[in-house]
Amino acid sequence: MRIKTWLLASYLIVMSLPLGAAYGLFAWITSYHEERNVVDNLDSLVKLNEMQGVLLESSLYKPNADWKEVNKLANSRISVTLYNDIGFMLHSTSPISQNPLSFMPRKELYEGFYELRQKFGMVTYKEPVFTENSLIGVYEITWARDEWVSGVGKRTWVVVVLFAVFFTSLFAGVALLVNRKLNTPLQLLMRQMDSFARGESIQPMPKRKDELGELAESFEAMRTELITANQNLTAEQQQKEFMIASISHDLKTPLTSIRAYAEALDERTLSTREWQEYREVIISKANYIRQMLDDLLMYTLLQSSKYEVELVPVEGEEFFDMLVSGYETLCNEKRIELRTTCAITGEYAVNSKQLMRVVDNLMMNAIAHTEREGMIGLAAVNAAKVPEWCFDFMKEALDEESGMYLIVQNEGDGIPDSQMENMFKPLYQADEARTKAGERGTGLGLSITQQIMEKHGGTVEIVSRQGIGTAIICWLPEWKGEEKE
Image (tube, rainbow, N blue to C red; front, side, top):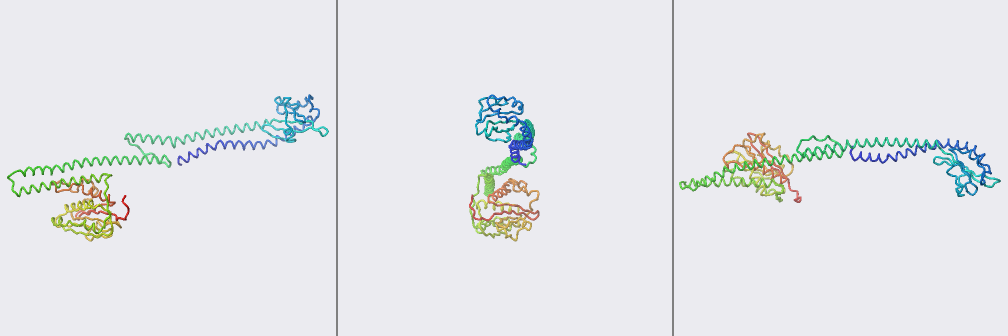
């Protein structure tokens, strides 16, 4: 049960308890009153018959009459009061009412003759006294209902005791429920928060189907999210430290070569051919450093949440035909067969500069890992149009029904399954042999490619089969005309 529900139920019970007790007491007293009415009426009629013989005597209704017989009729439970015909009290057996100046108005005096009137704790009876058809006085008899008062008092005490017992039990039950449903879990949650703030391990709270359970789940989700964020920050920090160390190492080698060859250029013993070779080496090393710094800058920009890639809608066939062209010369230099396919329809939101970087990165990787006389495939096709030259094992990855695929595949040794999950990590290279600087990449190309595709709303995937080759598949959604946020 939710805390709100049982709190409202407890509140309703506590508010209804006094009303219930009052109603029960009223019903019980009413029932008892009806039972006693019959008995009290019979007793009153018997006593009235005994007293009427005395009270109907006309001499009693004169000033200073002899009221000894009247006094004999009275006792601690019965009182008699005599009035003359205009309402002045002549005599009363009740010590409280013995006031010679007492007066009862005629309307009140003449009201309720011959009726047994039951009031709280008493029964009254009034009757006029006549002499020769003339009213000379009125007598009023009052009987105390001691048994009725006693019964009502006992029942009142019973109800009060039962009310007190039930209220105490209810209070104790509510206190236990509050302690079990509120205090205990809140204290446990506070201890967990304190432990988490101090960096100590904690055990999750047992699952509860109430507001505190939802609060505990929210805290657990927040704790898990913070732990994950801290782990990611730690991993990113370690990655940055590794990147700085790796790039520093990779920069040191070409810088050393540049310095050595630059110093050698000053020697006058160099031939023209040697001087030209040294100059080409310096330019090559400088280009490698520039490429590394350019990749590092782009990777850093893409990592920033504030960096947004501006996308522009383009006509697919024209743009991607331009994008996949221009690599024949590079492939011919290494005697690599290049198969190009472009079959695109529709419009796509792209950043041309960034997609050119993607294709350059993928093609440079493909060329670097393809032997002479090998084959590279480069395709930009709609999702339903798969080139014939694609590897059979990669066709399972082409499962999108809309959008377009940018495919770069190359023949070669392939990538072991143990290394596939690490291919998009920065600075990771499947071929870990460290050759001469300039003959290997920076290790940031695939990571940059992945981030660029994600900022285009697309995906990138690697499929490979050892002994056959590797394919990198980029997918882009078709532009539907939505406004760019």
